[in-house]
Length: 149
Image 1: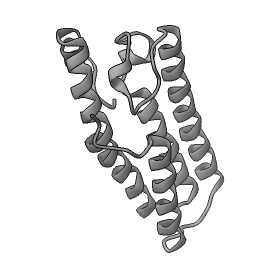
Image 2 (image 1 turned 180 degrees about the vertical axis):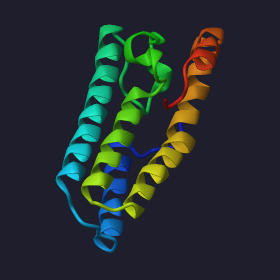
Image 3 (image 1 turned 135 degrees about the vertical axis):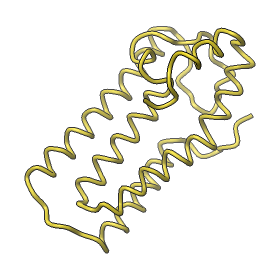
Image 4 (image 1 turned 180 degrees about the horizontal axis):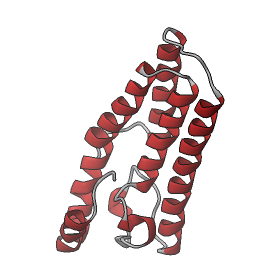
């Protein structure tokens, strides 16, 4: 059973709000470079999220993060050769893009908070469930592919 009862998308929105509050009190000069960097990070994040979902759909397994025990197949191909959690990685990139857009170094602490929170309350419990479900296959996969990047 997962420790986290809050859907990851809600966690993303929560940390985005925290980042906006931090940025409100720590604004730096806005430049065109910042806009391009922010957009690039958001695009990378969206591509990572979509690639993760597409890989799951092609494998015909669940995308529901609150029920990892319903996974019918361990997906290790495509973007899952780069990261064990490309959808969460994508969310982190989106938050990083948001932090850059807010022009606040301090707001980037929201990305760190998001990664820490999701690792502790979502990813580690998911990994326990996947280890029970797929055993040595998942253990070998964990040894080959990093959790984030």
